[in-house]
Length: 368
Image 1 (cartoon, rainbow, N blue to C red):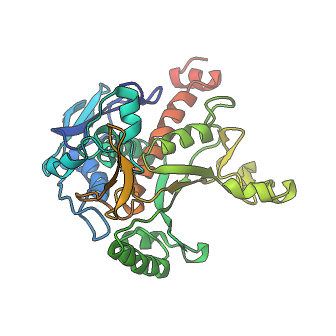
Image 2: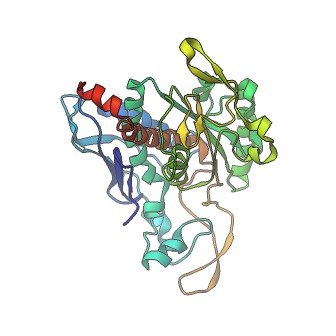
Image 3: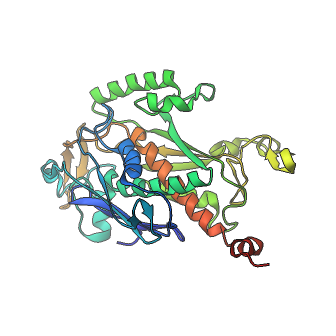
């Protein structure tokens, strides 16, 4: 299958299906000498695993990760790092009735159109469980960024009509909300709304916001591999994402240049600063040293229990009632996936940027 490998200098290749033996990832290009244990990966995977709240699928999976290669005596060796998570709670029989049916909102039809075949057990490669490999790889990327003083924090900005207010955003509240909403009042309102949607056998969409702090200026390329383009590509590759914006995003269409431009000022030691951050930390495809701000719009979970109209492989019009275990809302478990995909893009861009200037190459190799 083409398209399962991501990155240039820091590469990630995921594998596995939602109802197969397991899922995993191979990470190549990771420097040697980084302290890495399975517990470091597990902390991230625990944030996305199913069954953690009543707003997540009741599928019970421990999602215990195994590091198979690339680590020796608790440190990376510089060779490919392979990781695996076994599937232990498959109920493939839940999907036997839809083997020849195209579920609305899913990739069933498009997989069939492309391959003439599909794994109907939970969606196979198009399942949300594929993100296990992304999150495991993202945990390594996060450790690299931490070494450089760069943090990546995502949260649920909006669920349905309930959006967090800027003046009530508190990072410490993200973990207090079952929906990962830092505005706890809005979280409570969204929880009531979701409870009603669950009763109605429906699902809800929303927005995840991600903020990168400490990113140095000068990272990214000015043409095709613009940093915002690479970030958008990574975020758009998450299955349920239908829109990505950076900085003021689509709101810039309603602004004048005088409103949208970020004026510069000299900071300490003549460091260049900005008075505002409408750019979202990126100018001309290159990081400008300010916080990078990304937002991703997630569609409602397509697996709903309401009766829907569809067709089967024989071209017959039919009705379908989906069975199984599904999330009524994606964002709370997707927060860590957005963080991971952002971190992967940044590490790859940082590694690429190391060769941008000859003076820095000479400095690295200590050549005058």
